[in-house]
Image 1: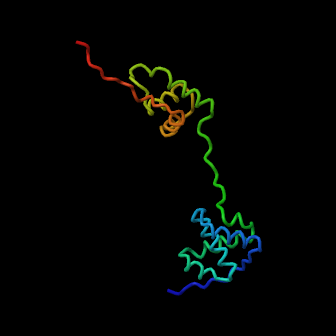
Image 2: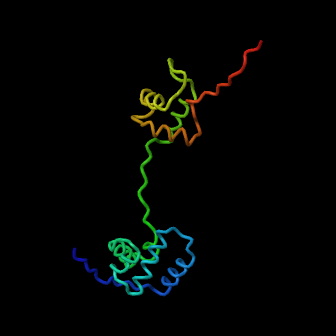
Image 3: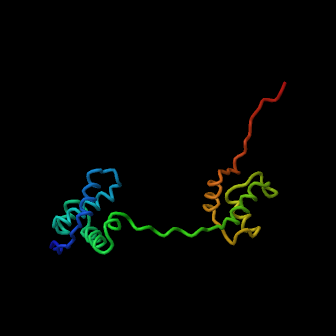
Length: 161
């Protein structure tokens, strides 16, 4: 199989950036990803090719290219750190959460000895507190409020006499 030849990615660190990368690599207290990216930038600054860096650090040449291009376009901090990822939208509003918690704090429906996660999810939809809700959402909600309605505190005592 023929080896792919990679072009030399022209990355020249500024003096301030070079000092910062050197300081980061000396400390060694950051995450492995940040340290590896700093090492990639240092090697690019010294004139190494993408293929040389990739084989020396046992990473993909595409990763080297991505880090180098990000430094050129966006600067040092962008090249070292990951971009923020979009968060999941909230499934329940605060008002819906409060109503579900209030429901759980009351007595369970007739025919049930205690609340279960499945029962809470079904009752919340049945009482039209929410349009639809999954068991995991209910479990996480109860966990954040430190509620465990499925547990009964039974104390076994001897009968007198």
